[in-house]
Image 1 (cartoon, rainbow, N blue to C red):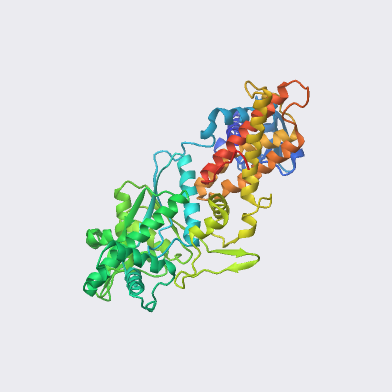
Image 2: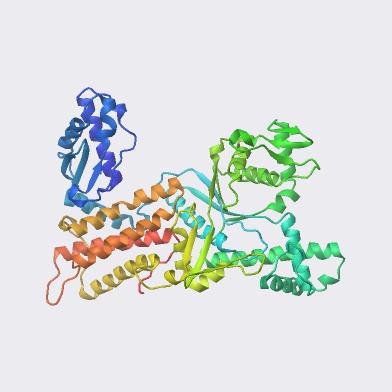
Amino acid sequence: MTPAALADLLRAVAVDVLTERGLDTTVLPETVTVERPRNPEHGDYSTNLAMRSAKKAGVPPAELAGWLAKRLEQEDGIAAAEVAGPGFLNLRLAADAQGGIVAGVLAAGEAYGHTDALTGQAINLEFVSANPTGPIHLGGTRWAAVGDALGRVLASQGAAVTREYYVNDAGAQIDRFAESLIAAARGLPVPENGYGGAYVAEVAQKVVDTEAGVLDQPDDQVLAAFKRLGVQIMLDEMRASLESFGTHFDVWSSELALHSSGAVEQSVQDLKDGDALYYAEGAWWMRSTAQGDDKDRVVIKSDGNPAYIAGDIAYYRDKRARGADLAIYMLGADHHGYIHRLKAVAAAFGDDPARVEVLIGQLVSLVRDGQPVKMSKRAGTIITLEDLVDAVGVDAARYTLARSSVDQVLEIDLDLISSRTNENPVFYVQYAHARLASLARNAADLGVSAADPDLALLTHPREGDLIRTLGEFPRVLSSAATLREPHRVARYLEELAGAYHRFYDTCRVLPQGDEEPAGIHTARLALCSAARQVLENGLGLLGVSAPERM
């Protein structure tokens, strides 16, 4: 019996109890809270259902809790129900009910934890979207790990997820990038506000090698060629870096294409015609204050040129035209102002602003030997995705970047995440899986099978703790999807690894010496198989490997 199943049982029992006494069942919450007590002596699970409902029902909480406890003890799978304090209910599951969690994991396999809660919802998930003016830096790498993990988590709950990269290949930064490439190709100093670093010279040389005589053309053609080829070379490198990092995008959208196709002009004109924009001070404005912005935003400037938000307008419309029910934007720490603007764009087209969600990620810094590692994109000392992977590997990089809430500034200790100790979270989790894989190999050598286990034999407290931890996985995934917080999966895996290590250190799984295999060995081996499956499932959702050996 998983926590979700127990919550459903509690609500059903509460409906019956209130109905029998002629009390209003609408006082019951739609979702019943079920938690694991910090003190195992208080039971396997606890609930505050009686305390949440009693006052509205017109009865004392302890009395309602007593009614519920008496009825629950008659239910299959409930070994004991006790009233605690002012109206809490502490519950103990029967051994066979706990064993049902193990059986459920083994039956579901790779699908354990997956639901259809978001089935029918098309989600456009835009992340990374770093300008194609340099390699993917540390902030973009964080989004690559977190965004990809979020996409996997959302898909596990049934959503149809489109992973999208928005290429900012229009505007002044592309001109400065091309001018920097031209200067490098001609052996000249970096232009003012231009881009420096070894990668600029490398890209410039590739442009020269790709288009013979490019530097001999008229200046406007030279600039156009270096813009076109320079951006394409950077995009190819960025795409290759992301793929090697395990991050795949379904769609790469071009800002320049939105402008050149007329989509921006048409979208703005349609908003003008629909009175969603207003004209003032020689410019066209969007009423973004209606969505909480600190001021209305200019869409068409007084000189007739579109502001940056004009591209966002066309881009949102394009996403909706492609079938997106929800557009999630994952943006950097300096983009807080975009939250209300993008919601205002949705409202301008007559959509519910809730169709837009904006996640803001905070900065990332590195330390090595206790000292900060500096980064500066334009100074050419950028810390790139490749730098991080070279230092610690894909698994450690992805796991570390995904295990913290994105609204927190993240400091990565390169020494720690490179270590093979239990202090390193990714090692701790992966080692648990490798230990389980080794156990399975040893069981096969001894001829011990997990087939047809008597799971009711799993009555040891450490077994119960591990089983209940396995039962939490579906709820963790559901919360991670609902709250857009894939770091919950990583933190859960660390809890699961700890529960397994404690179980293994206390409960002998395989027979020793001349001991014949018994039912307890089979049951514990099945429990280990379930733990291994959930670790593999969770690591897979983070895009991290589940090694067989370490």
